[in-house]
Length: 244
Ligand SMILES: [Zn+2]
Image (cartoon, rainbow, N blue to C red):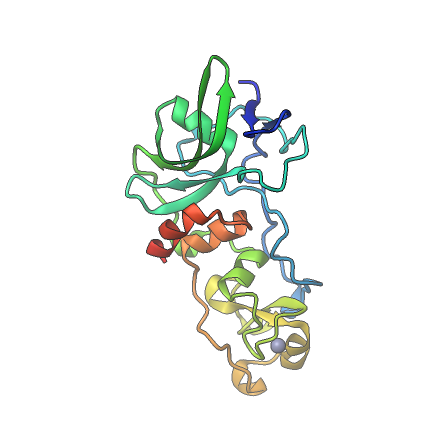
């Protein structure tokens, strides 16, 4: 299928959007020894690839290519992300506009809410979806199985050092250092500023007298939606809040 044409209302130019490769997104956390890997700056606005959609793989768009934006989108352009609800109405993922169109055309999903503008695909046109719902239930990975990334850790911890509360120069810290048997799982990794990371060094919390402010645990699915889509459209808020 060719790229889905996205026409902005009042815009003479069209935007052609193709999906990024499946699984694109933030790299997994790969902290070095002692958990001293450093994120040099806070970058919550950095664009991440859309989350891998939950629907059956058969519904996948053709294996194309990184996202292509042919014309510069105006600042008021509608989001290129679509919120995907499970059959149970639980928000589970964010997908690109093209994948949403494929799911709708194949009747694997239905529109819950439209955004602005229209999509033109092959011989048909449809309102641009903002929120869609899968018609059949898609198994959601257990929270603890969700891929652990630095950005998801930072988002879960509200971009705040879990020891001193600073927002700058965030890294990730293994609460129990790896050298002492600590795992690289959600329950043992927290956001941590680099000075706290140096101070804690390779010590256990009680040795350093440094304890995380909140007990680390696997994040809610809405955290991954926020990571995948830095600008959450207002129409999504009610769905994400009700799920939190
Ligand atoms: Zn700190």
